[in-house]
Length: 337
Image (cartoon, rainbow, N blue to C red; front, side):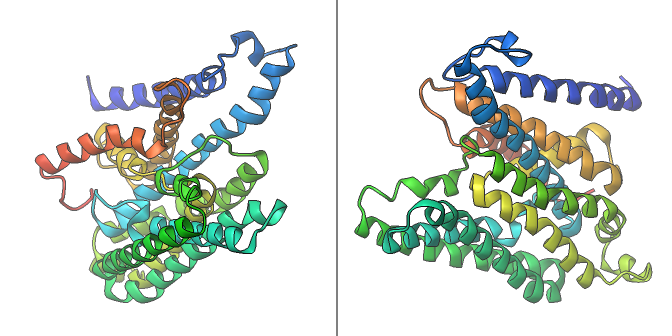
């Protein structure tokens, strides 16, 4: 099969699979909903399940998947490494730390109502954005290596403080330490409409800006010297790109927790299927592939074990880890192409 035919087939197949995943997520679960209820449903029980439980969560899986996939393509191009991911800057571990701080505030301050609802996501968002700002301002001065090293340091520091906070939370309430663990493993079930709107409001403008900035990603992939020769300041561009990636990631993490591997898998699969495309092609298609991966991962997390919802990262890891091992075995640590 020729390369052009493969691309055409993929462009046709991916939207079909995404639509199928969307429909399956609405009808399958602990309670199976009749297909007819997708068009018209007279039973209140099924309408509530679709309109208030599954529909916002399914849309969130598609939206967050797009953010992870597109952000992964940007990070891999910007850092010239196919194993880079959206969480390379330490934003994931920082979000976990912020969420734990919010949960500790709820316990110590005995917060209730709206304050208890917003404490965890707001602090997760604040700490995640703050960590990204530190990485951008300090790490970008040293180029690619500086960003990666600063991200590693932020990750180690965040996890060290998080372990201490987990012990403090357990000492205050021995049964409470299990509740914020969704921040560690990812959970889309239970996303509400207002949370989806907030994620969309942060994702739409930043994803459009990243698509517009694809030319700069292509220049950074060729090296800092090439970027400078083209009149582009690589340090300034990396700061802008990391900031654009961090905003929707931090907002998404605040509500879904850490969802791993999608940001690595999606761009890699797209590059394998389309060849060495430019950022203007790779970034949006990686976003769509991320939506596809996360939509089916969300479906699998709800139907694999009856009566339980498996953490999303556990599902994506079943695919992501073998893929990473295969990449390593075939020398996948080279520069991104």
